[in-house]
Each structure stands twice: as C-alpha cells, then as structure tokens.
Image (cartoon, rainbow, N blue to C red; front, side, top):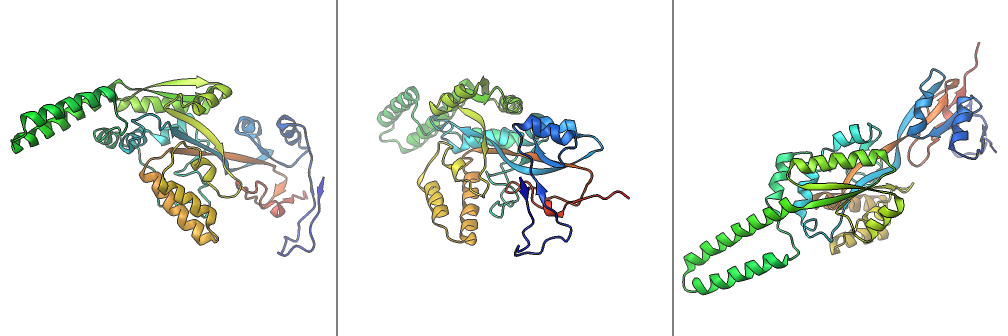
Amino acid sequence: MILSINKDYYSKLPSNSKDIKIGIVPDAEAQVSMVMALDSDITSVSLSDLSKFYEKEFNITKYEGRDYESVIFNYDNKFLKDVNFRKAISHAINKEKILEEGYMGNGKLVNFPLNSKSKYYNNDIKQLEYDKEKAKSYLEKVNPSAEDKQLSKDENNKDKNSSKENKNNEIKGKDSDKDKKENNKVEIKKMISKLNLKIVVNKNNSERVKSAYLISENLKAIGIKSTVVELVDKELDEAISSKKYDLALVGWELSSVPDARNVIENIGYSDEKLTGYITSLINATSQSQISDVYKSLQAYVNDNALFMSLVIRHDYIVTNRRLEGKISPNDFDVYEGITNLNIEVKK
C-alpha cells in the first residue's frame, strides 16, 4: 500500500516529504524480521523484541503508550470499604520499586488512567506517597462500615450493661463510652491482624506477577498478611467477576482519545458524587469543561483512594539509521512526525 503526499494538505509539508510504502505482514514476528533484514525502515515493536535492535543499524524512540496498570479493590470486603484502610494500603506500596523491579523500568508512574501528556491529566495531584508510618497511622483509624456479627453482639451487650449500670451516673457513662471505644479499637486491630488479603494476578504476565509479590511484601511491612494467587486468563476473569479476591493487579488498554470513563466505571465502586462526575464528562461540550471535571474527578479518586494507579507502559518505534530526522510517536499516533524523516543520501 502506498500513502501518497497530499499536495492540497491544509498545512505546510516539509519540502523533502516522500510517499510512504506500507508493507502488510501476517504477524509481529514477520514485522520484526523485515526491519532486522533492512527490508523495512520503520516499525513499532514490543518490549520483548526490543533487545534484538540494540545494534548500530537502528534508532529506538520510546514513548508513553496506552497500556495502563493498576490495582483495584473488592468493595465487598468490609475493610476495603473503609477509606482509611485503602489509604493505608496506598501509602504502604512502594510504587517506584514496583516500576523498577516489577516492570523493569518500562513505564511511567501515573496517578490516574490518562496519558500523563494529556491536556486533561493533572500533574499537580500527586499519588499517596510511599510512607510506612503514614500507612500505620491510617490503620489506627480503620473502623469497617460493614457490621461484624460477633463484634456487634459484644458491643450491644456492653451498651445494655452500660445503660443499666450508669443510668444515673453521667461521669461513669462517659468513662464507659471511652472504654467501649478502646475495646472496639482493640477488636478491630485483632481483626486486621487476622486478615489474609487475596491478591489475584495473571500468571502469564511476569511483570504483574513480580509486582504482586512486591505489593505483598509491602503490606507485610505494616502488619497486613496477604497471599498472591496466580491465575490464567479465564480464571482471573472469573475471580474478578465473582468477587473472589481482595486486590487485583490488572491492565487496561486506554482509549486513543483521552477518556478515563471505562476504567472508572469498572472499578467496582460507585456513589452519587462519582456518578455525577461521569455524567458531567458525558455532557461537557468544551475542552475547558472537560478539563475542569477531570481536575475534580482526579482529586476525588486520589482523596478517597478508590483504586491504585501504577504505571503506563512504554512503547517503542525502531527506525533504520539511514533515516534522518526526528519522529515524535505518541499514544494517539505512533508515527507522528513521519513526514520529518528523510532517507540519508550517501556521498
């Protein structure tokens, strides 16, 4: 297939622009082979094939792609319904170490499911940073919203006894309330110590598997036990759809146009405010309106630790060194700037 220069293009084209010949091949292996054999000058490649091109014949251009990695929570777990518990987990996770050791540096840390170069991505909103002491302090504030039958029974008994014994004694009543709160705090602490969070991950994705074990180690450091369960594709889908997990390390392919709604609508959490933001995005009619909504939405997601963003993976363009000029690939157009390239003429 030949892409011919559009002489009537509305913008000025470089004077040395040439037609582009596109070769259609059956698979990625053939695509890589053609470039290595110098039968093709330019192609996009995956990380697994990148090492084949570290030679003097090729240039490699890295860019932020569309493969987004995150951790989602199971909101059927009464502890994960508690924002303090989610913040404790978020502060406990060393995301920089996950990027370097789990994803081998192949990606960029992000705080939201949008490309970090997007006009709607807010760089001023920072993720909950890695801080074990902050994580432990949030654990101290945890008070699960869902009722634990035994705990509720004990508390009700204490309430009845307190009511009888302290009916006419205000000071003793206050002391009893204080004791009850302390006892409740001790009970919750015991419950947390007995937790064993189930972290599910695709066993065929080595980067996610490494990252899952790093997350498990981080949680152990603040006193939360967890077990990593490696599953194949169908098993993982089933575990997530049937809520047989506590944390899930998952990947998403972001839209080619900036739109985080698919991720937000599939994290398993909803409330009136979040629904309002989604509706506002749908109804927004200008870039400034969309930008304002995303600014508020990103702050809301971060303040409530609704899920944990990790990285957006890098993608790569390989070019034959006989090409001169600079290409500027991005998540929307991997061959952006191809008209700037020219074939070197040897003298």
